[in-house]
Amino acid sequence: MKHYLPLAALWLLGLQPASTQNAAYPDTTFTNYFRRESGWTAGDATLSIPLPNNKVLWLFGDSYIDNYNPADTSLPCMFQVRNAAMLQTKSNPNQMTTLLDYSQSGINRTLFKLSNNELPYYYFWPGHGYVHGDTVYIFLQRYHTPQGSSQINHVGTYLAKMLLPNLELVGIYALPATDGIFFGRWVFVPVNGNYIFVYGNKIHDVPFGNGTLKVWKPYVARVPINNPMGQWQFRTSNSWSNDPAQAAPISSHGVSPGFSVLRRDGDLYLITQQNGYLQCGAGREIYSIKGGAAPWEPFTSKQTIYVAPDQYNGQYLLTYNAYVHPSWNRKEGLLISYNVNDHSDTSKYKNCPSQCFYGNTRNADTYRPKFIRLPWSALTGNGLGPSGNGHATEKAAIVPDQTLQLRCFPNPASDHLQVTFELPSTTPVFIEVRSLTGQVVYTAQTVEQVAGEHNESIELDRWPPGVYTLRVQAAGQEVVQKIVKQ
Image (cartoon, rainbow, N blue to C red):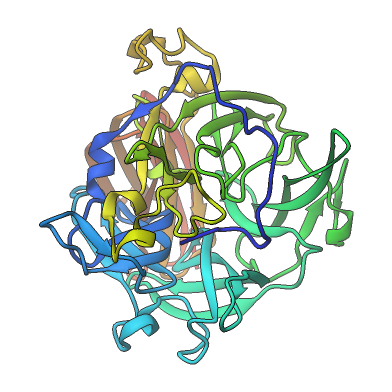
């Protein structure tokens, strides 16, 4: 059972049932990709990181490995590892490779760990991450559960490094304390600039009636994209500070323990959900909160986009971990996942399905991610909004971004260049590199790429040193950028 909380039960804001109509709708195709019968078979967290060459890295917390019984669609009550990953190829999304420590057995197959001696009492649950050059950086939250206890104690934020193309795990490093803020919930990488923006959250006591509620509030920090172990700066109420104690929340709205940030039509949107993770029936509402153009501007305008319907034997499941997946954005809209779970402690959680309290197995679908699709018009307010049946609007009502966004790194480069571009719509893509004399040294063309972020890795080792011109054409637009081969 995953609480995904560092404290005991939190009664938070927003527990009332929703009366709004769903703007998003289930994406059953994507949900079915994760109804697997071998390797990774169930888990939570469900974050994704776009990789070069049209691959996607999926990250999970407590996970089941194999052990699926197709006769009754069941799994044993206890998961096998504390975290895991899967590698997906976009051209064949139903085929995924499970990433574990295959040199070990049992729980020591857990992918992210400091040693084989720490499990099961010390463990990592994954946050978000990003790619820079040949390295994938992944934020991890470290927890401790004392032997014989169910208490979950947070003991720090760490950063894992994996090298491309083989995703070799080369190290896990402790980050400095940040005044109780859980950074690494989400990473926003601008198309241009030297910084990434790392989002986190912290619990606040908020007045409520004659007492207080404990509410997660969002924060943001910036750090050099090429050195996330370097100097962090934390957003205050009006500037940046090296002191995390000076950081200020970037929204008056509470957020869930995990949340996402994305850009659309020039503005940023925060995707989060209703709190109440230890209460079945709460947590079902998923929200978007509109911000401004800059990653540190306040998120102010909130709307409900979906109310999760998931039940087991007539009782609502726990609902948590709503995240967006930019690799799979399409012209139809934004892809969002959320997790479900039940609870074995019937003395405290009487309204939860409790399969393992009455038996030795659980239905696999009660611990697998669910996916929904949110039309762009429903997110931004551009267009007609959701139709009467809660499904997608007419495609003509969706207003696409107007700018093809491009980023190249490292630049200058020596052996390879990473080209990242964000497509406003599904479109053919043409990439060309020429020398200053006009000689074509590289071309790539695809018939169709879906909307969202894409990565192209260009090998430079055979090129003479000098200045080159990179040209990317897509969606009726062209972007030209100079690159330097050292």
